[in-house]
Length: 391
Image (cartoon, rainbow, N blue to C red; front, side):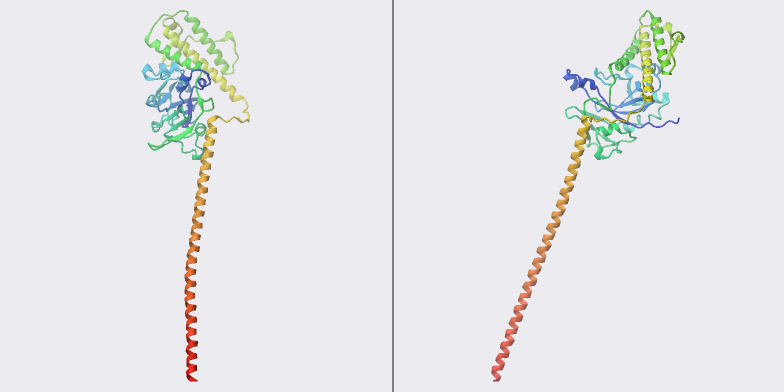
């Protein structure tokens, strides 16, 4: 299959579960909606964080690893990342999407090494570097310095952004921004990782950090290796629609974690390496479970049903659009009335001008009639005088 450039989508990373809790008002006030650009590679979403508060854009490298069939642990070892090369939660305990957040330039080198740089060329394009969005908690709105030109102006809203795939964005002038209404509740287009997923990311990063800095003795390594390998083997068998036969499990004694060879006996020497192995294996199991879930989801018939529940910010956007339409219709009606008024004034002026001309004409006619009568009287009088003189 030929590689294709993946189109962009707009989504929001947001800890909506925190909003549903009754307590923690201080945490809620600091709970930000983080705008991202997204592409989907091999049914895995990869994000580009574009929030205005951060000094630069970040790419979710952990999602990139998963899309290419790697765990976070494999990716960390494969690219030999330092702890200073990435962010996990930006020092925010309520961060909605813990991952290996790296700079765009580093993500480009990773994508090139993994052979997906062409597919991700839009997401990693330098032309997006100046795009920023930010949320206003008090006004429940999102402000952008860019627009999607393929969305009509009258339909432009947060919902339209969340539901539109696009291949081009247009930067606004420096003093111009566009605002769209948002709702801080769970809805389509708002994404977060649950505690299990965030915990797994933190665990693997912590294990990787311990492996780089500490070397402690750990015991009972064999049971850890065998149980993890057995569970992974069963999940892989289910993923391939095979039949589980416990006595026929084939468990390897060595594996590759990124570019690091790992043998069963190695777990006996380092506590940090055990943590690395456990975190790596748990993510492998979760990935297999996700594959099984996606396979079951794809085989189920698609129900032709529609939801009658409109989310809050959709209603706000619809009201805003209706107000805009009413305002536009009102302005058009006012313009029509003004044009009609001008026409009436013009017609009145024409009537007044005609009346003035008519009065002048009548006055001139009266003068001529008066002169004619006066002349006739003078002639009659003159003839009368002549007649008397003759007699």
